[in-house]
Amino acid sequence: MSKKNSEELVLPEPQEQLLKRFLEEYDYLSWMTRVTVLKLLIQRPELVSQARGRLLSILDNPSLSLSDESIVDRMKMDLHFTAYHSTEALLALIFALVVDPELPWLYLTRYTSSDLNQMVSQLANKGLSTFHSDEKLVAKALFFNVAPGQVDDLVEQSTEFTVEYIRELARQFRDRQDYNSFKHGLRTMKPRVSSTSISSTNGKPILQWSELATTYLEVGARFETDGHMVRCIKLVSRAIDYEKSARIIETNTHLVHNLLEIRMAQVTGRKEITLKLFDKERNAFDILRRTKIGLSYDKMTISREPIETGYPPRNQRSTDRSADPVST
Image (cartoon, rainbow, N blue to C red; front, side, top):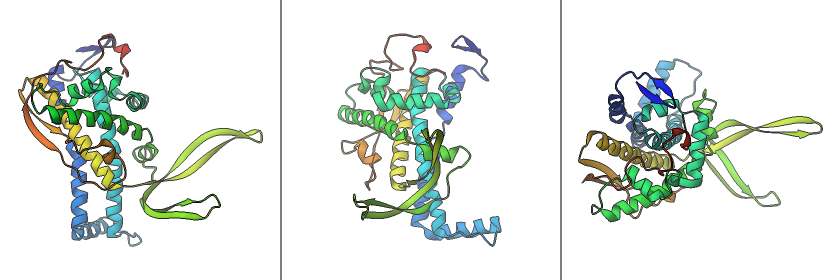
């Protein structure tokens, strides 16, 4: 049994065992699996043709139009939404490991949409200083918890990158109407090429381009006109940049790995851990903007000793859970 907010919880197994199961079996590799499969299909178009043939055979619908390109486009859209999913998972896991490091699985199970909005808002506005005034200290404690004297420069660079990345990632995640339309009952339509243009003040187009996009409805705010209330429903197209999505997924995967690796070392007392570190060429905004870049990371197995902040990295103002940024 466990107590939380004066509520007695009857757990399915001992708390320590539940925590270890969570840390060992958290399936963050599913995100990169999708990235890898899509890149393979783009490189091997004959595999797409085989997949199309099998789909047509399974669906057995003569009126169905299905091209190789449409299959790849759907997978690009899937990657677009997977980037959102991995972002939500990363941001929520940060809160779970800080607010409830002994039962993060339960925290993730119980948080609500309102809690998520609050998490994202706090990280977008305050970054990791949501938890402690020194956000670099928080980043080191959560993601790069190693003793001084071991790859200090790379740890410092990785810390600075992560501080910037988490804040900017949360800012971008605030605008996720297309993600909500996808995960709540599949309200988004199939991907299609959409044309976008920028016009001058006299209405003459000065720049026009086409790109793959997903389409959904967005409900606007109510307003009064001519004595009655009106609400506008907008048809919105959101561009799909699968290369940017792949960069976000890869970076989120590495950060989630570090979170779990460090917590597992603390639970088991393991003295060596493998962390992903970010070199000095890595810039958070390069990953999150629409541009074509390559990614490189350093993987290092290092002796692990806790840094001075301890765990979790929080201001020592109160141990009362009601004072937490987000409570469940």
